[in-house]
Amino acid sequence: MERTGLLIILSSPSGAGKSTLARRLMDWDDSLSFSVSATTRSPRPGEVDGQHYHFTSADDFRELVRTDQMLEHAEVFGNLYGSPRAPVEAAMRAGRDTLFDVDWQGGQQIRASALGGHVVSIFVLPPSLPELERRLRTRGQDSDEVIAGRMAKSRGEISHWAEYDYVLVNDDLDRTEADLRAILSAERLRRNRRAGLGNFVKQLMEGDE
Image 1 (tube, rainbow, N blue to C red):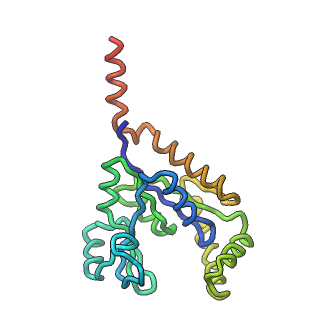
Image 2: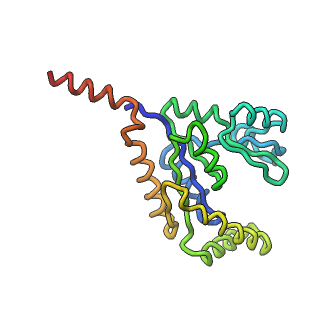
Image 3: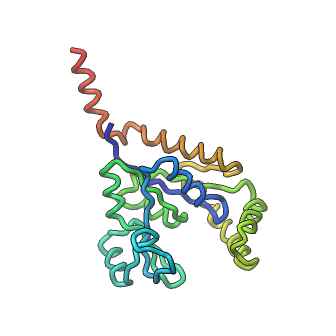
């Protein structure tokens, strides 16, 4: 039955498991599209244009923002990043859902956009701040200084939890993944998202005459 695609916003402080959960969700349902961000920074070794990022000039990026072709955008360390609107709208028309790995600021912008009515937002919390720090250290990717900065930033990010439709505590990765699947399955079945439901009911009723 036809339906309109969803915009699934997944946010969390660094280390809470957001990226792992996003990968698992896409492995579970390969019809999900991942929103590929546009950026003005230069490609790093191994990065492919259109796969990892849409690499663009600052002038072209600003023109996309000016013409309302970015669902959200921000400047990070002197480079511009944003989520292009056109591929998301194409996926929606085809009944495919798009997954966004964005912070609370990006989530706010997407919810405030013209496509905000199609958003399902999910915030992932760690079971505790000490556990969050342990996970960051276990990754072995960051210095003590970087970890301290991430921990300081995490409190501000967590303070926005009440802006989201769903809040999950990731104390067990498998259970949290199951909860994510349940949320997505239920949201896809909402009456107002199923464009073909009215025609189906009409045909159902006429077939009884």
